[in-house]
Image 1 (cartoon, helix red, strand yellow):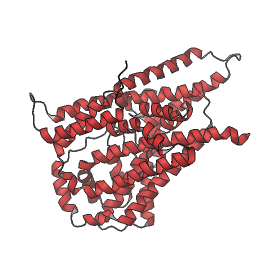
Image 2 (cartoon, rainbow, N blue to C red):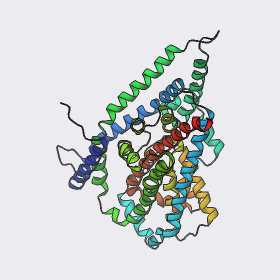
Image 3 (cartoon, helix red, strand yellow):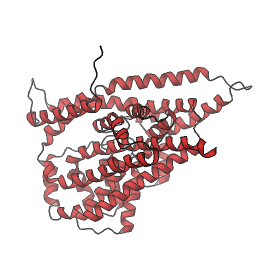
Image 4 (cartoon, one colour):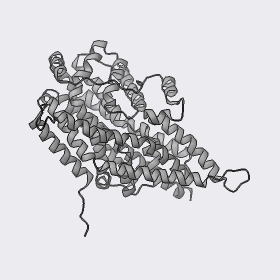
Length: 431
């Protein structure tokens, strides 16, 4: 007799609830043999770090294995770019519509200095990232993605560089595979077996690590609630609410409708079958860490392995709709609160900055908060405002960061579903 296990999404929610309860009860003080909620958070972070460390090599071998198993054409790459462009355009449209219609930042006028002073007392400084800051210069960004060695991208978790290398070597593998048996063409069958085995082993190890995510979430939530408490969220509720609304409309309304109307996948199938991946992204604060679960969920939905890997692995940095939407809305919110009237041209610059910065994010935690100063500066806000933004937003950003990651996971799933539907219609169109 087999015992039916609770879904991962349910176990994560239980971890969140218990962690919040312990955070309120224990606070930031020792309560058991010197144990603090901070220690639980540090332990939980170990599981998240391990997830991310394994996810990057998974991208490499998933793309290589996809090339070995199925030809990936330039046409599929073009379709991927088109789908991602449509999605991010919808995200920006939703954000701008909400901010220009509701104008939630107006409620913060004359309160911004008070809130900044209060929040600065409770906010934890953001540690500097080892990842180079993104730039709005396309050539500079491109240069940062060309590695100096084959090991460097894996060591630094530079996702775009890993994808570029995987595409290059994958195309070479496919070239040799298509010419097997010809004279002077090397036999790559042993290499094919190695790539397939490495991918399966990585996927299995990641599946084991994912099982401890609910416990990691328990510790991380206990740490955050214990340090900041729940009171600060009342003052920052307006900012939190309007951005969560934008992310929710894009992730829970636009995505399910697009999957249903274009690909025939009902919202129930899309959200229910993808719940484990969404909750993993929310928990780990990273769509990259959720990648193995996302691939598994897409298989359950009926998406082909080829389309899933192209969208989720090769296109992961193009599917950062959550970050793009957040950056644009946060910049407009702060501008409204400070009385700056931004015209259509300035808002377009904000959107372009958010899109380019989102593509440059390397899957690091709190990436949206780290690149926010770049977007704020591009919008023309004074340096003093840019400097005040981080301590002001930091206490609630841990919530928004997880929602952003959940939206990015939903984006990965939608792109895979739409790409698969497009690919499957092609033979019928040719007939």
